[in-house]
Amino acid sequence: MSLYPAFARPRDLGQAAEIMGSLSTGAMIIAGGQEVMPSVNYGALMPEVYIDVGQITALKGISEENGAIQIGSFTVHRDVQQSDVIQNNLPLLSYAAAQIGGGMQVHNRGTIGGNIVSMHPLYDILPSLLALGADVDILKDGEEQRMALADLMKDASHGLGSESLLVRVLLKPMTPDAGWAYEKLKITAGGYGSANAAAIVTLDSDKITSLRIIVGAVSALPVDISDALSDYRGQAWSEHLAEEIEAKASAAIKEPLSDHQGDGDWRRAMAGVMARRAIEAAVKRAG
Amino acid sequence: MEDMLEDTVLVNLRINGRLHELEIPAHKSLLDLLREDLNLTGTHMGCMTGHCGACTVSIDGRVAKSCITLAATLGRAKITTIEGLTQDDGTLSALQQAFWDNAGFQCGYCAPGMLLCTVELLETNPDPSDADIDTALAGNLCRCTGYQSIRRAVKAAITTTKEGAPQAAE
Image: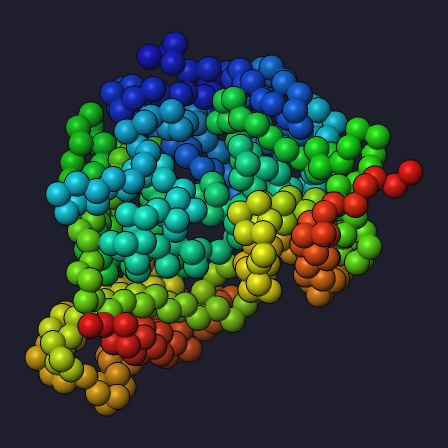
């Protein structure tokens, strides 16, 4: 192996599978580079081979067919923000993509695939994708496999980034009456939040018919607190409910992060605050 | 399989209007390519992590941080650096002049990034609000100005554009 990394440019998914299958560890898939390159520049990552997936057309574009929306993993945040398909059918995702830090430059080059694969606790897309119940297609061991994003995140052996490739994200449109919100608490300079929450709610007059809340940036991975809120289905919305949701969201954070974005106890408290703000804003939009 | 691996990569980049056919090592960032190989030192190295925006250039009409852009991935991209905003005789663009007139920089280290982001902002949104300006420049850190004079400079550039760009000074 040379001292410097080699470079591979697969033209399609078949070639990508062939390259990934033939290399041992040390290969690194690169798309926009917004996750990989900072790590390389700081010496935290030393790829032996870059696999540039930028020429694979199957990874690109946003489409809608028979009520199913597909977002190629090589779709940059700017295109997710500005796509008519996403704005009309998935306003939560369009909004969350605009909250990504790093400025216009990162929005122009960072991809939805890279954002997911990095599984960084402070990034902005995962809570919304989980709230929306996204599925993903993965190219692994030469075959495409479909699975729920929530399941993928629990699977430590997914191999994404070197041995397997995220091909696309699959989503169902939000119902037009669904209320939604993504709240991000940002107290430090830079783009990262100290806590965030994505919420989707539907109401029948003032009664809750469905409710999903995901809390992010407070633990190693976003936490889905929707199950803990299932008793609220059928109940009328009230300010009191918002306070209960705040308490339940905080209680759901078992192992809070404690870093320069804030210490653990405070992060746990802010998880609750973000959940409450998100559900309040989502209820206002519902109907 | 081995024949799919390259040690160097051929790219055809149009940089500030000039075509460069370059054989580059796979690990080279666009920042290093511009500064070390092409002597375009107006693109500044800052944090190397994508936070500060001093290394901003425009790739196919969209701003990017060149320190976290792997040059080998760029293929046939069109790139504009800060040198590309100025006329060949050194005359500043109307936007650069507005930054000059309004003290939109002090040490100047962040200025290339601020300027290239403003170019893209005004192309997509000719009449931005203060919030639009702040969002467009959110990926650029300035340690001198406190940002107020930068915002003032952007607004002055908008006014200049509306009234017609001034002729280059005699």
